[in-house]
Image (spheres, rainbow over the protein chains, first blue to last red):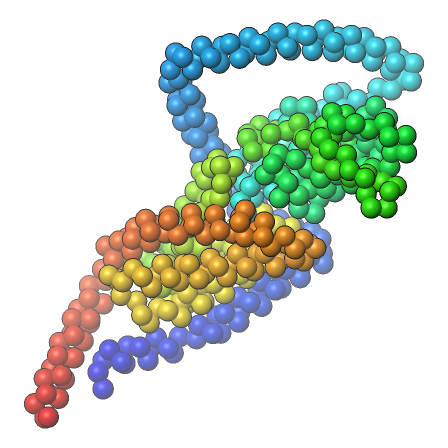
Length: 289
Length: 191
């Protein structure tokens, strides 16, 4: 018999099938354990966090440094064009600012009237950098560089700029995972700002490619909801703080039951270019206590 | 399994995960990103066999689970089976053969994408197969295949240049080939 055949036989003796069985059982066990106990296996997560997260932070920092380096080398024309555009923007922002100051004045007066002092701008916030995307393509979920040690807890709301990004779903020692409102299967109860009509905002990856989110179950008997209206998180949500801007209504369609409306809204957050987010340290559940 | 294989395996899983999650995330919005971890597990299955690929698959899957899932063990299970199936092709291993590993990666990616579709879309009540296919699966498959053309030779080069240079092993192989020749000659002589 040739020794080559013998070598193959030796390899067959290694019980890969048993190893497969062991792995299968281990994985199933892990799944059942993490699913039923509803507590993360913090040992494994902290170990992975300690090893991986510093590198991810480093890579992210390197990446932003490289982006900064590349963008420094714009041509003069590009810069001039940008300057023009920015000038326009400043004008527009100036106008908006005037309006906002007016609104702000009104707001303080109204707050005094209603004794409301719980706008989300007053909650304690902390900033965090996005250091990794969750598994799979697109920003269904992402990892930020702050964790339990920085006081981040599960169910804290995450915003970017002025708009709602999502919610913290898991925390490690030095990292947390944020689930975005655009990911499939995520529902947020919201309300149209000016009329306080309730609606449900549901994540949908297919629509997100066009930069939209789906909403449904909008009850609007007086028909005073129109495209362009602001949509904010509502008071009845059990996890999201009230009054956080989600986006603007872009289409309103009548449902087949003729009672409710559904359609699409444009989020204010640019989910494709998230790099820095703010975490609101006030949780909705504690607010109600 | 030698210590070299274990060390290169750990290092590769670690580096590929970092690249996948941190470097390529910046490209995620411009389209699909290649599934480097799948390329790694499939290549190890082909180059090293079921056991090595299962270990690699388990740890890559676990990392994906920890940083991306609410339940640990799901991706680990998928990647362990991927490693096992890819490892079944190890008996065809030939350093200069590139078609087989690329085919393994192609089929492996198809299977993983299909399982992902079932787990994350159908079970969530979302049957948008057309969108998933065009918007997600095909771009990912394409980028994975394109990058595997570069990555598999790199892994192979590392494997053949640094890992498979155990002198005793080499000598044994030479002895075998000499033995084969001698046997063949003997056969020819007896005919």
